[in-house]
Amino acid sequence: MLIVICGATASGKSGLALEIAQRLDSVIISADSRQIYREFNIGTAKPTVAEQKLIPHYQIDICDPTEVLTLAEYQQQTQQLIANYKSSIPLLVGGTGLYLDSIAKGLKIPQVSPQPELRSQLAALGQTQIHAWLTQIDPLAAQKIHPNDQYRTLRALEVFYATGIPISAQQGENPPNYPILQIGLDCEVEVLDRRIASRVQQMIELGLVQEVQYLSNKYGNDLPLLNTLGYAEIKQYLAGEFNLEQAIALIVIHTRQFAKRQRTWFSKNQQITWFDHTSSDLIEKVWCKVQEFIAS
Image 1 (tube, rainbow, N blue to C red):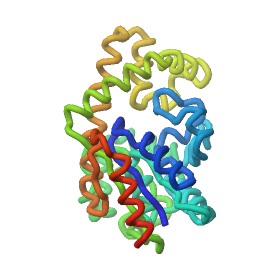
Image 2: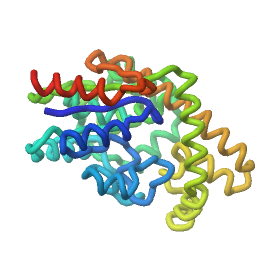
Image 3: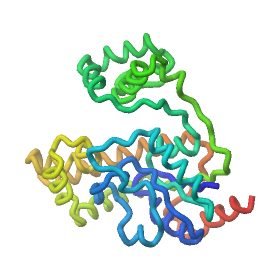
């Protein structure tokens, strides 16, 4: 058995997961593509040390910032964690759709590691050209990948050049054979927007600027993770491109845009049971659903 708790950023997943995990005497497995990296703490809203002591957490702080963990590696590690944990029902918690789908849907993932040199050479040719190539090599993949989506275009070409087989022929699903309860948290957009603004302000108060400065000094400004949400804007502020107030406003805007993409992703999953995270009796409603799941 597995319980998934998903939703957009700032929707209250972590707090709910902690409460349910305590009632189940269980563990939490993170499904967040940035929380896997050590030292990236404040900007990723990583569970605190106290929270991690309260309930065992896995798939957090497993990589150095200079390392790359592929989706296939995450899937393999997480599947093994779930298989090994038999004393209770583990909770898979996060907002990274691909991480969640890799487990809940059993995505078939090509075993091809990133090849930076090949990607760099292809990217230099321009997105229009490489997407046109993909259309010739793998028209099925090209239909699913937006012409402006460079990351997925490069990945599809990378897989083809490494294996000689189109990525579309290597994909699919192999769902696990154990029952899964998928719980989603959502609310009105205006409420989520306010929560996002509040969270960003809290990150600043907790020392996000200092965290970015430390990471920049230690790893250099060209570290790819420093170009992700929250870190990129503060890095620009530290470079003097704009003031802190402007940086904060940009983080809020970009986080809201990110949350919209997350909601769109999760809305396509018909297996998710949705709950309004502003409900005063949210925990009890979810707990009832969990008990029904266990009983069935």
